[in-house]
Structures are given as structure tokens and as C-alpha cells.
Image (cartoon, rainbow, N blue to C red; front, side):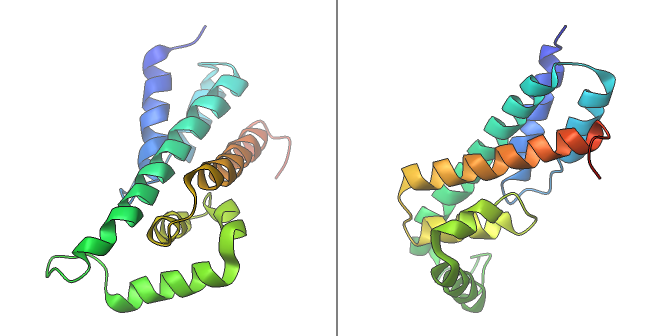
Length: 145
């Protein structure tokens, strides 16, 4: 039997983890899997969708951030933005497959800033995020690692 509050909590943790907010979804995912609160496939789907939507939010922030670049309160330095842009230009679209990693938020932000086509962005990010949660489910089940 699935617990809707647990799935909502997982969705929100996964969404938050893919934004600039300091969230961790792995602990929530693994705890729910270990407790048997929902089928593993459902946990993977919920976490993947939440995490992908979180990356889309970060992408959209990147698309809109340029207009605030010279404001005093702006959270990034010119150097940080230039580094992110240089890195993204060098590695291109395939770097979106690394959005599951701890530095993935910067990749999603750079993708928005550099106007990556939204459809390609969502497809590659969804593949990366889903793969991450599948591997996490296998680790939690003790099948790998």
C-alpha cells in the first residue's frame, strides 16, 4: 500500500534537491524504500519527476538571470558565470547527463543561461535523474555497491 504523504514528501525533497536549495533526496528515497512505503518503481518515478522539475526550475532561473546580472544583490560573480558558461560550451549538451551529480544545478543554470532548447534539456535531464534513482534503488536493495 502506498502512502501519499510519503510520496509527496519524496517529490518535494527531490524537487528541492535539484534547485539551489540545500535539500537531500537520497535519504528520503532510501528510507521509504527500506520501509516498503511504496513499490520501488513508484519511488523511482516520483523522485525522478520531482528532481527533473527541480532542474527545470533551475534552468528557467538561468534563462531569466541575465537581466539581473549587474544588480548589487546578484548572487553570482561575473567570474562564476563565465566559468559556468565556458564549462558548458566546452562539454555541450552531453553535460546535461551529469545533472544528477552535486554540481548538476550549475549545469542546469548554465543550460538556461545559454538557451539550450527546452525539449532537449528535459529529455537529457530526465534520463540522468531517472538513472540516478534506479542506481540508488539498486544500492539500497543491496544489489550493487
